Image (tube, rainbow, N blue to C red; front, top):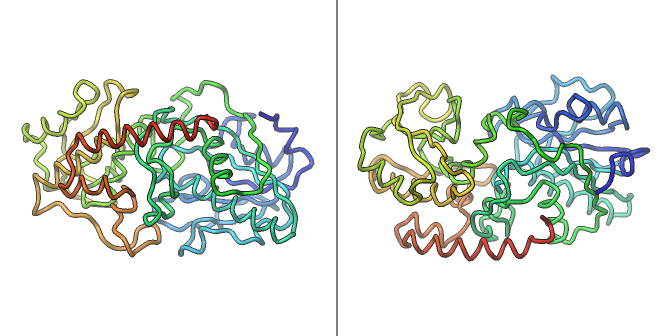
Length: 378
């Protein structure tokens, strides 16, 4: 692991970051980098520099004043905006990635980082100059727990890099170095450390508007699947992904509640409630639903819960529950639920073709394989 001065001093730097990179020298890291080393270009991910933009909303850099630093938006109005062109690296010799991941493959920040690394690789191959990659190795707020199966190629999209598990269990630098090797990118790769070894949840800075607390990261892998349905994933509440439901759910039905809790007894509980989203799905409507409370977060398997929850609600409310169609993160040829689940075997469970015990055994095997494959990146 290098010290910042060893790889940044005297460099022409482009930086992918947002407000989640905060605390080094008591400020946002982009400001500290700008003061210490100079910052030629700032690359913005989804949600904007200060996580002020909601999901699937293109950003504008017009309200940021960064002096002579050029701003490049990596989340615009079309799919092409996700991929920086080779010209984005003109005048640079260093690409600094300093952004907080939440541990799940759907979360788009490290996909943006991969796309930028691929563009930097092409820039080098065209003979225009060499780019070194420097990654600030921020800890994984969801911990080292692994969940899921490799994303199958036909489901690859901005919310899923082929071969990556739903919950990868790697640090930011660990996953990006894995991507560098798997995608054969001829880039010099350096890790630097700006964060303390232990980061308190009280110092949490939301990386995006709907990840308000570190606890959100523990449930996100499974509850993000609700984005592919007409269930509210809690956007428009103070606890998105921890509060969820729909107007048609009877939160007082104890039979349904017991079915939802039966698979991981003693690890979590569901608190039934009513809520009214202030925006997004079911805006202004009274929804029945639940808040998920984790008794043993280190043992909670979020993906298994999310799959079981969707299957149960689909069976209990067959006339009201729906999987959504239409564009999702710039793909319109497949439903969002397929892009998110990304695995025919698991999708078969949602369709009633597999048993819970089958997908549990299947995931235990895929998770073991991923742990072996990524051991050197941990």
